[in-house]
Length: 434
Ligand SMILES: Nc1ccnc(=O)[nH]1
Image 1 (spheres, helix red, strand yellow):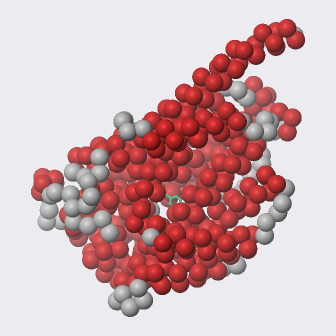
Image 2 (tube, rainbow, N blue to C red; image 1 turned 90 degrees about the horizontal axis):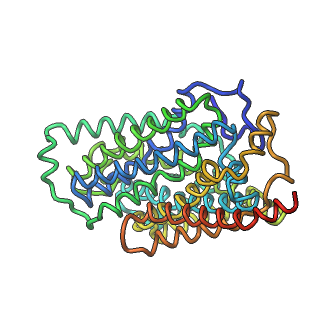
Image 3 (tube, rainbow, N blue to C red; image 1 turned 180 degrees about the vertical axis):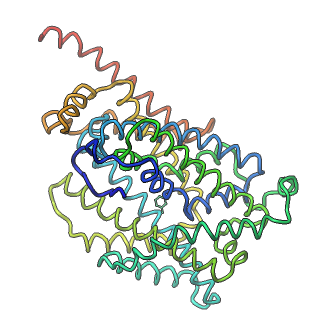
């Protein structure tokens, strides 16, 4: 098995690389989860069947291209996403800032997952508790478990994935048998309508954090073919199977609410799977978010925050988000993710594959099995940081096209043009000096 926490600040040596399946299973795990099912349910309930699958197809192509690119860089260099960012335009502090953006997004996910958990709890208790109290209770409870490193959550992790897959298979069979495709295609969407371009953006938003995490896993991969295989396997499993089935199920049942779907189609067992799935992922969400913040504060200020207090604070913030109703803003949340992360990834890809700003030093140190040292690492890449912010704003405010693609292209292009212009102006100086 591969360990995400190993080799935090060094290259994964060639003799520690693992099989295709070892990487693929962990990578697929990121998208074969309840949140892909929720996303699919939203698409199914808000779009026609053809539009929903078009959104998945185009979203998957975008996700696939950027994930393969980052995964390839991770495999070649044997380093994690956050290390890669240092020599792909962002510099040491820029990479720390990306860590903050990831930590904040995980805080949002904690709020979403906890809200789902609370809804199931409230449902199981016959709505006696009310959603607000259920969310406050479950969030506080989980926060305490994670802050004090309670191991029982790891058991939830072991059983949650197989249980979830079995449940989706059961529900699909139960709900979809007796209906045929032309019949489902005829069903009108019940929810608030969603355009294809909005659909594409939330499909990308739902998967893009996994894209940024891909080098963390593919640094253990042996070759390009494995990286490509991992990318395709995850897309097929997460986007086409889980997401696709959720579209069909939500359409057939006429609701986007996963708790209702699970309870209606599989009763108490359905609710139990929801509870385990959200527990498992929220353990990780809170843990990674806290570590990310601790690392970032240390990187930026040199101050060491305490893990337990940081986790308590983040847990309380996430729980507050659940109580305030972040789940009702699921589409907006995914849209924000769909325009904030693609710029960061686009810039890293432009830097690594086109500008190759640090390829020489990466090649040289790789041959020695080392990483570039501090003197060979930029402190902060302002161009990358500013271009990613501008890209996100472009994605959010432009009215035409597809927000996620707008943000990706705007940031990549601005960064590329700026760097090319600067390099041109600097060349004569260098020749003079030489
Ligand atoms: N897609 C997700 C990424 C991170 N955390 C989640 O709960 N979901």
